[in-house]
Image: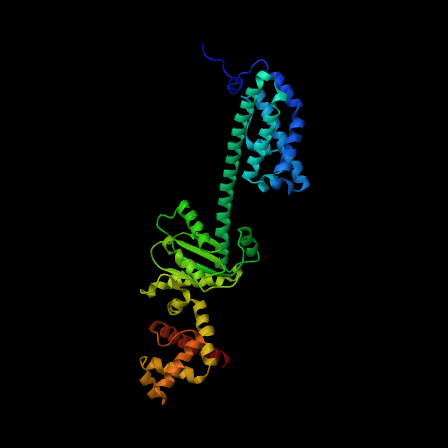
Length: 404
């Protein structure tokens, strides 16, 4: 003969044994006792529960009571009952479910299950205690899986929302920012420590959601703070924090697609990163004019190409950060640079034109590098200084004409 089917198994099929109604009555009568014991265990064993406000602890009591009541309903009529975690948490306000983690939820389920198991002797006859324990285990397992599913969906929704907010923040940075920018960045967990650097490059040809998530994780490993914006075929990364942000940006090069990667100038706080972003984007548009550009290339290394491409920020940078400091350093430095460039970068030729010793020319060129940070004897940096001289003269001429 086949062995008799356990009562809990018959209940899961919709069946019911003769003593189940008596157990249900005892369960209903013992609900308050079970809830009280569960809360006592929570207070004794869980630090996070003791740290909650009194109102939140009262909501936890309602959740525990709702879970016990839902189990009783399922035990009585399993074909109609529910072990949906959302239904159990419906007794509490949404704010509570957002403040309690999945780990906390599973700890709550575990303690309630243990309380019901420990009191099975009082709630069921000797022959039904094993079936009651089996039913508790089955129900708790399903509630745990259901809770995990709820939190997984919430995490996916939160991740999708964070990605949209992140894209809006990056776009706002590029456009210059507004008064809501800092609050939006804070909502994304930006710590605000250290400097900020913007990196712009091409997106890989197969940039899907998985690769975008991988890029975000890599950025957060490379720097304390990171924002990622995917704008069509372009990737904009904002790195922040203390330490070497250029080195952090260089470590991300394999995550970009083929082609140039441009680093904007380092800014202070993230609210000031708009200039860095606009410089990096302007560099991406102009970098094609320099086939030998390194990867990554600094946006300020592309000042001549950006100037030729009509970038007003490059023009201001050349005038304010190169030409004016050079003029302020004294006429001899400007004359020496002009003659050195005019003589084909010849020390002797510049010395003859200026009627000075070549060592004097050498000293002045070295002094220019100290004043503006660009070395006239380097071919590329000399080009930048030559463009700065031309732009500075044009700027002064335009001011003089306006004054006439």
